[in-house]
Each structure stands twice: as C-alpha cells, then as structure tokens.
Amino acid sequence: MKILLLSSPIVQLDFDRIARVPNLGLASLAAHVDDLCTVHVADIHGLKNHREYVSRIVNSYDLVGLTAMSFQYNEALALAAIAKQAGAETVFGGYHPTLAAEEIGNSLDAALIDYIVRGEGEATFRELVASKLAGKSPQGILGLSYHEKDAEASGGERNRMVHNPPRPLLSVEEIRMPNRDARLITKGFYSFDVPIDCVETSRGCTQGCKFCSINLMYGRRFRRFSIERVIEDIRDAEAHGAGSIFVPDDNITLDPKRLERLCQAIIDAGLTHMRYKTQASASGIASSKQLVDKMGEAGFDGVFLGVESINKRNLEFLGKGKMSNDAEKAVKYLHDNNIIVSTGLIGGNPDDDEEDLWENFKLARRLKVDFPIFYISTPYPKTEMRSELEEMGLVTNSDFTRYDGLHANLKTKHLSEEEVQFITWQMNARYYDLQWLRYNKVKKLYPKWFAGEMRRLAPFYAKRKLDLALGRRTARDFFREDLASGELCKGVI
Image 1 (cartoon, helix red, strand yellow):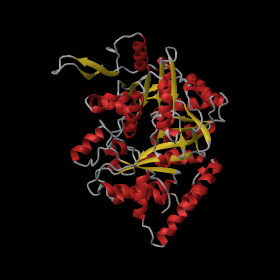
Image 2 (cartoon, one colour):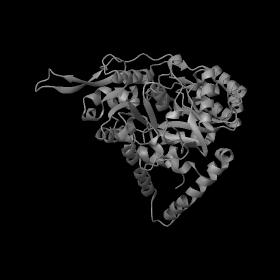
Image 3 (cartoon, one colour):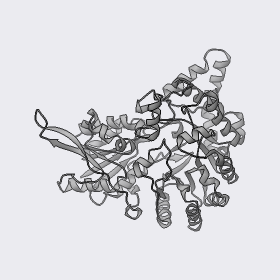
C-alpha cells in the first residue's frame, strides 16, 4: 500500500514572501504509518503548477490525504478529483473537514471524499490504514467519518457518510517524532532567507477566544511535550537542512516558566546558532522580562504577538479579556532583545467605525511593530463568534475561499463590507513608509533579504506614486488590483 499526503497549495501570498514552512502535521501523520506501508509527504504550496505535479505522481498511490483550512478547502476538492480519476481513495483532515464533517457528508463533495479524519489525526489515521491493510471495516474507528451502504433507502442501495464518535486526545507520550524523510520536496522552504522547519513543543490552548477553532479541535486542553523530545526534534530538523525553526504551538506562553526552561535547554544543547520563531500571547511575553531575555539568548529572533485590539469593547467581544494592557511591555521586552515583532490586530468588529479601525494602526505605529497584520474579523465555521455575528445580521459572505483573515466577509453597524476591506487595505498601504524603514529590525537581522525586497518593490511603488501624482490611477484602482491579486498587505500608495 502506498500513501501520498499533500499540503494545501493555497497560501496567503503576503506571508509566503516572508516565510514558507513545510507542513509538520503531515510529517507527524507519516511517522504513525511508516511501519505499515510506504508513505510520502508532498509540500506542494511552493510549486508553480501544483495540479500538474499531483497529476504526474498520483498514479502510483492507493490513498491520497489532503488537509485544509476553510479558505483552502475548494482546492483540496480539485486535487481529490485528480486523485479519484487516477484510481486512488481520498482522506481529508484538518480544521475545515473536522468542523464541517456532517455538512460535507450530506453534500455533493462527499463523492470526492472517502474518509474524513477528524480532530487530532495520528491515531485515527493509523487505525484507518491498519483496517484497510487487514481488509476490515472502519466501523468503530474513533474520530473517523466514512461511507457506508444504506440498503433501506427507497430506490435501493445508496451511499451515506457515517460519523464515528470522536477520539479522546492522545497523551503526548503516544505521539511519535515527525518523519521528515517522508518528504518528496525538500527545497524552497524559508524564513526570510534561511531554510526553515517546524518543531512543536506543546498542543492546545486553555483560553476561550470566540473567533478561534483550536478549542473545537482539541478542547480547552494544554499538553506539553518533554523538553528532551523537543531538543531531539530540533536536532533532527537541523540534520534535514533547517537553519531556522518555527514553533507553531497554539499558545506556548501558557506556561512561561516551561518556555524559559526550554530556552535554557537550547542553550545547554549548543543550539543557539539556529534562529527560532514562534507565536505568543502579549500577556505571556509581558509576564516576565527574564523569560524574554532568555529567549533572546537562546536564539529567538521573531515573535508573532497576539494583541488583537486596543479597544476594550472589541477585546470583550473577541473573548480576549484585557490584552492591549500588556502589548507595550511585551513589544519593549522583545525589541530590547533584537526580536522582530509581528502583531495580529483585528478590526471589523460589530461596533467598529472608521476611527476604531485606525486605532489599531496608531497602536502598531506607537509600538514600532516590525510587521503588523491588520486582520479582519472572520466568522469561521462553527465558532461562537460566527453564531453571534449571524444573529446580528452582519455576515455578508459565506464563500469560504475568502475566509483567510485578510478578506472582509462581514459588515459592521457603521461600515459596509467594502468599507471595512478598503480601510484595512489603506492601513497596510500606509504603514510601510520611510518611518518604518528607519525603525524596523528586519533590515538589521536579515539585510540580504531586506535589500532584495527593496529592489523588488521600489520600482513597483515608484510607479504607483507616479500614477497617483499624474492622476492616471486612484487609490481605489490600486485597491481593486490588490484585491484581485490576493496580495492585500502591500505598502506605500
């Protein structure tokens, strides 16, 4: 039996220019079945023609796995059609198939999907593969959805999708190290200009953010891998060519003392030459200057900071409690250690007007954030926030291909969907100016990458400036152009 696991080829283009990271989840799945069969992972999100690549290699595989968030789901269906045409069975996993399994099972999409692995996939996927090799029914495999013949339906036999009960979360001791040798594509993954890989140190989050799907996947649980395992995993990633490590933990700063111990272990293991990046809460980073100093000593040089909003009303709506109180201290601690700061700032909440949206811009400027990401509140499927927004009549679009956090899919009580989108675009377009050029830390830490980006973008921006000055184009023209291209975080108009 041969299995092919495919990453989603659909990415957020603005982020892809800064970092393109191989899929850790698929390498973990591969590790849990590589003793049963031949398994390969294809990280196709860096390919120019991913459909042609998949069409060329898929014929030799019996089972093709696809993972998708909401905005990636449609393309996963297109790849599933290619796999089915080649005679392979398909299995879907990830956030969107997990949360929408029942809707998928009752839709025409089900014809392209033989199985859905819901939630944490390692044990469920292994049991599915074992059952297929043994010629057994998948009945009883926890966390699995599959097709079953229903002979009682009028008109004879038909196919229906059965959803087995969910699977309890694994203990971290049961989760094997990722199999990076299973990857077919090993080049083209970077952070700035350094080869990158992923290493997880924990799973889950205990916080109850209303916009987030993590709790729906894992519950409000926080599980820690042993520090010894993390160090071994970093060494394995380095042996496979990585010079930089992204830590994709859902909330690594839930246990600041543990993160400090991990940083000391990295130092003791002689791994400070690697460059580490992670995402963290503002409150966790602000809780300890000693922690951030230790992160800097260990080699961390980039942190995505969840700030969300300066507006107390919006923080309450998002389920974030008090967050912006910690932002200033957190950014200062990070910048004092020469760590690049990216912040997530969410606008387009129910009571937002234009001034409220621009408050996030002013906060990012005041904090001298290196890469602010001006997200737009997104009603992701099955989240608490979606239910509330639907009740208010503010959801304007259910085309999930646009559910990437950068596209407006709602209106506020004061702004239309297009106004939310345009104002957010303006914020991105105005942030990366001469003032930003002076204070950002990227040019110091990654001078070669920074110089290359300036050479690439300078003619583009100069032409836009000239077109504006001569009246040949308007800001709205550029807005529509960027909306069509999918690159919404360009600077300078």
